[in-house]
Every structure is written in structure tokens, then in C-alpha cells.
Image (cartoon, rainbow, N blue to C red; front, side, top):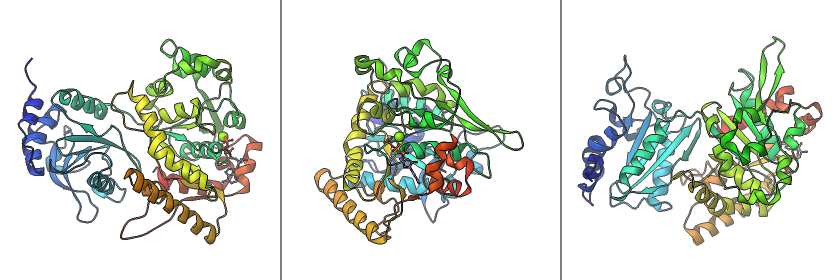
Length: 456
Ligand SMILES: Nc1ncnc2c1ncn2[C@@H]1O[C@H](COP(=O)(O)OP(=O)(O)OP(=O)(O)O)[C@@H](O)[C@H]1O
Ligand SMILES: [Mg+2]
């Protein structure tokens, strides 16, 4: 079999190649053409618009009226290069540093990079694809170690990912503890994201109630049952249409315009299929929802407390996981740490069995929900979290600080954790069968803050 140009070029790259060698001997002559980018569809040393930061390469297809190399505007993809000898295996110091760097390039304040959807980190040995959705930046693939045997396949796979027109971010609301606000957050996030501007964010949202035991979310909303049950679809999803499992929750504004979101309600039938549940491969929900990733801006999945089948499936269906927490339970911090270092990677491994190279479900920083926290209480929580971070650093050499203290840097030791206050209207909204954000201005403010902190 003849070798591809990509493979030949890569094999010729020196083991001591530095950034400029990787750029001129591999990225420009082989990698970008294999992704169908042409000679004038890139810029070298592209200023991100934040301070003096420059990313090695920015890329975008030309349009009939605009040549990217000339206009240098609205890049689609950025590539950060490291020299080949640098260890950027996952978890290494330089990997963690490079990820922080990429996130800085994709920060909302990096004005020239606002349109970037994808980012690549590579040293010629490793290559990893990151996705950007609003404020969220997460590893879309594993950190792939290239070999002569896999390079053609892996680079083609990344092309497939960056070419697909996904608009959705799927988010699981997870905490193994009960009563921390998973359902309340799901419903109000869906509400505020879908509300038309200026009240909300005008997004198309689907919520999935994946807690068939309690079905709190479905009970809270008054909607018409869809024609097909989720469990039926689940067990035979290739023969049904996902649209038949979806119902809509809509209200009428005073100007007669409808607003609201779509819902896949809880299905108690799941509880009766017993043993058959164990034969369902983890990742099935993700596959069931895959065609909807082109349709919705957000898919929010409510899961039950615990760590059983429904949690695992909800997490496996998600790009990112949002964890409402309480400040006074050290057990809940320990669980968050366990989720980050072990539960999500294990689920990631399982879903890779039918979604090859997809990265692990990615944890967003925790937030405190529904509490009034004294400064003494806050300090106590910070101390407990620091101990957990230290322990994980010593035992596993990974730094989980960003998942607890996202604003913490060496220069600025900011220990802020986002708080969604306790508010009586949020709790009582269930009586009106409406998310609190539809009825109450203060609730809208609180959840808008949450959206701006995490998503938009
Ligand atoms: N910010 C808030 N202000 C006031 N009450 C809240 C707030 N968040 C949640 N609650 C109330 O706390 C209770 C538990 O919330 P919720 O049902 O959302 O938790 P959960 O994590 O989904 O629970 P479970 O684990 O049982 O599914 C509910 O009565 C809810 O109304
Ligand atoms: Mg719940």
C-alpha cells in the first residue's frame, strides 16, 4: 500500500523538531491540506486580541468575498504548537500549562478569537482537539498519541469532527447527593436560556428528565405526553424517530408570542424493564440524541442522585457536567473530586467503545446552590477543598484546582466559588408548574448570572 502524503511528511519530521519545523514541515504542507484548507487560509502568529498573546496558527476557509490571510478576521480553528521533545502527555506539567494557554486564547476577552470553534494542541507526537461553545472550552477528543499505524485514521477522524455542524452543548446535572438542586437548576437554566431577549438568551433548549424514579422535573411542568415513550425508543432506537419522544413546553407572552423549551419526559417504564437495563451499552442515550445536536443549542439532562445506570448514561450523553453542591458537606467535595479523577474518565472509556477518541465528559467548576453562606463557613469549605486538591496532586499528580476555584492563578489566589442564592420563589415555583425564571425577575437575575458565569 502506498503511504499517504500526510504519513510520509510526518515520518520525515525530526524527533528534535521545534515549533517552526512542525509548522513548516508538517502542518502547512500536510496537515492543513488533509483537512481541505488551502494555501491562503491561515495566519501565522495570530494575535488573539488579549494582551500581547499570539497563537501559532489561525485558520479559516475563504469565502467568495473574503480572503482570510488578508482580512485576518473571524478565525475558525487555532493551532498551538509545542516542540516535539516537550512532554505534553495528559496530566504532565507542560500539558496542563498548554491547556491554560489555550483557554486564555479562547477567553471571551480575546476579541480576535470570538468566532473560533475548535483548537488543536500538538507537539507532532500528541494531538488533541478542543471545542469551544460559548464560554465553555473542553477537550473534544482524547490526547491522541500518533503512530505510523494510526496517523491517517486519527487525522481523518479529527477532520470529521471539525467538519460536522454541531451547534449543541449537552450538559448533565450531576451530584451523587440528593436534594442539592439538580432538578431546580435544570429547569431554570432551560427557562432562562430559552427566554427571548432581553429577559433571557433566546436559545433552543431540550431538557431530558432521566430520573424515572422521582420524575420531579416532568411533574413540575405541565406538558402533553409525546407519542412515544423514551424506554421504547431506547431499546430499539434505530427503528424509531427521536422526534416522537419529544414534547414541547410552551407559554404565551402578552404579545401572543410563544416561548419555552422542549422536553423528553421521565419514563417510569424504565423501572419495569429490570434486567434488560443491564444489557444497554453505556453511551446509548448519547447515540439516541445525536441527530438533535444539530437542532438544539443546549441539551440539559437531569439525573437522579447516586451512581447507577441513569447517572452513568446521563454523564455519558454529556459534553460537560455541571455539579450543584452544598458548602457544608466535605463528602460532596470528595465525591466531586472522585467524579473528576475517576468516574468521568471511566464513563469516557466506556463511551469510546462506540464513539472512538471522544474525550471524557468534562466537569465544569462546582457551584453552591440555595444557601446563605457565612464567611466563616466559606473559609471552612475552602480549607477542606484545599486538602482534597493537595491529596489528589500528591497521589495522582493531577491538578483539580480549576474545578473548584476556576479563578485561582499563581498571581491571583482567588478562591471564589459561584453561588446561586437561596430564594423562596425558586422553591415555590413548582406549585405554578412553571420555572421560577418565567415568573420572577430576581430568579431571572440569579440564573442569568449562572449562564454568564458558565455558558455565554
Ligand atoms: N436556589 C434555591 N432556592 C430555594 N430553594 C431551592 C433552590 N434550589 C433548590 N431548591 C429547593 O431544594 C429542594 C431540592 O431541590 P431539587 O429537587 O432541585 O434537588 P435535586 O438535586 O434534584 O434532588 P434529587 O437528588 O432528589 O433529585 C427543592 O425543594 C427545591 O425547590
Ligand atoms: Mg432531582
